[in-house]
Length: 197
Image 1 (cartoon, rainbow, N blue to C red):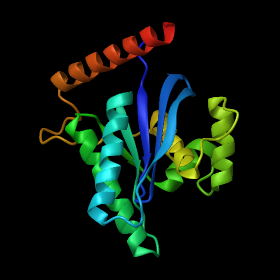
Image 2 (cartoon, rainbow, N blue to C red):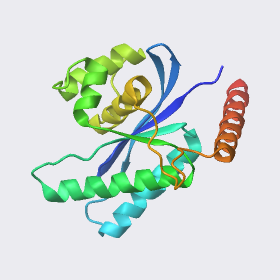
Image 3 (cartoon, rainbow, N blue to C red):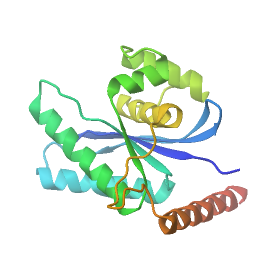
Image 4 (cartoon, helix red, strand yellow):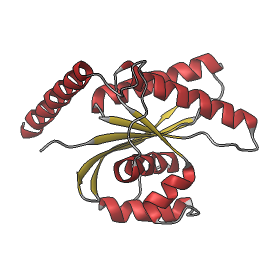
């Protein structure tokens, strides 16, 4: 059985949340990985972005998602926060595009509604639902990791489909799709093999 794997990204310059989930059919899903990529506020901006880019690259290579879902940047009062978030979003979109992986963008209210049923839910309500939906003992920490997992679940359940990134208007060429599928199958075979030892 082919499993759909989604990488959720909660973009942030200091902490970029990462969540990887596999679809199990219906509204069931399994948490594969959750965490954050951290950059130091004391470092120059270019080095911070490089740190985030390297972290995202490593996650994409290790987990080989079928789709990447990123929280859509929305207007906030703090312009510097919006700028950093937008820059990290761009990196996530670029890294996915370079691998031929379709991307989707979801607003915070879409994520809240998909996971909790209410577009006004708070972080605690989201974390409570993640525990319930994914059969976890505790919510992924820190909160950025939980947010990323919620973004991935939103794409699994309510995704409008991938955003077309190539010039031809398709999300992924057939050659890219075949390559990505082969890479995924090889990686999962390695995972099964290593778990037996």
